[in-house]
Length: 58
Image 1: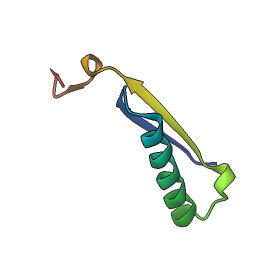
Image 2: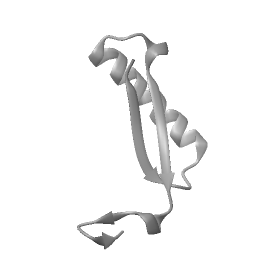
Image 3: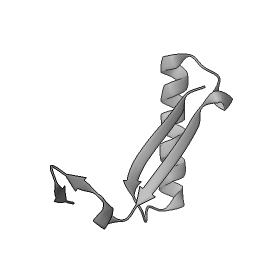
Image 4: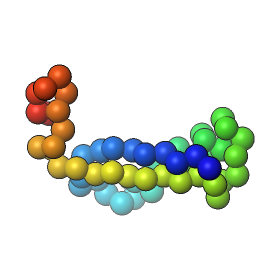
């Protein structure tokens, strides 16, 4: 059972997350040859102040 975690800034519309989850699911099914109902997508959202790259806040 593939579990895919997507980390992103909070505030994206639900419609966008739905579309992304659908697209990721399609690719996972095609590439890994698993059943659609076995794919789990988890969105982890955090505010902009919680993201850092190379020690610098994004």
